[in-house]
Picture 1 (cartoon, rainbow, N blue to C red):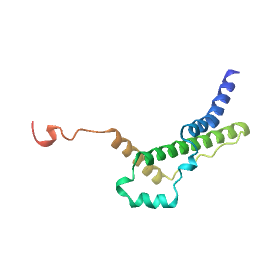
Picture 2 (tube, one colour):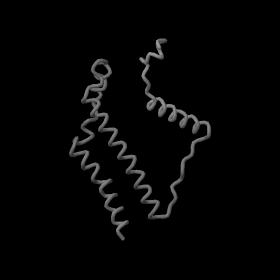
Picture 3 (tube, rainbow, N blue to C red):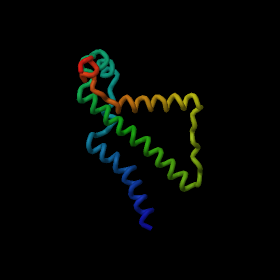
Picture 4 (tube, rainbow, N blue to C red):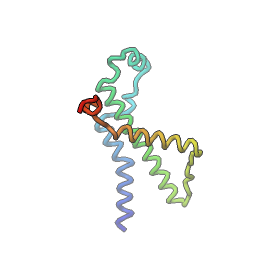
Length: 126
C-alpha cells in the first residue's frame, strides 16, 4: 500500500515540483531565449561569447531539456503501465550502433584519462 503512494508522490513532485523549483530559481525559461539581434551580436563578439550570463543561460536550458526528456519518458512508462501497451524499443543498425558506442567510449576514456604531460619521463630526463 505504501509503495504506490510513494510512487505517486514522487511522480507528482517530479512532474510539478521540478519545474516550479526551476521557475522560482531562474524565472520563465522563455525569457532567456535570445532575440535574433542578440544571436548576431553574440557571433560578432568572439572575445565575449562565453560570459557568465551565457553559460548560466545554457545551463538552465540544459536542465529544462533534461527534465522534459525524463518527464516524457516517465509519462510514456505510466501510459504503458496503465494500458498494458508495450513501448517499442528502437534499435540502431549494427554499423551505426558500433559507431555511436565507439564514440561514446572514446569520449569517456578521453575525459577520464587525464595525465600529467610535464612529467620528467616525457622530456627525456631521468
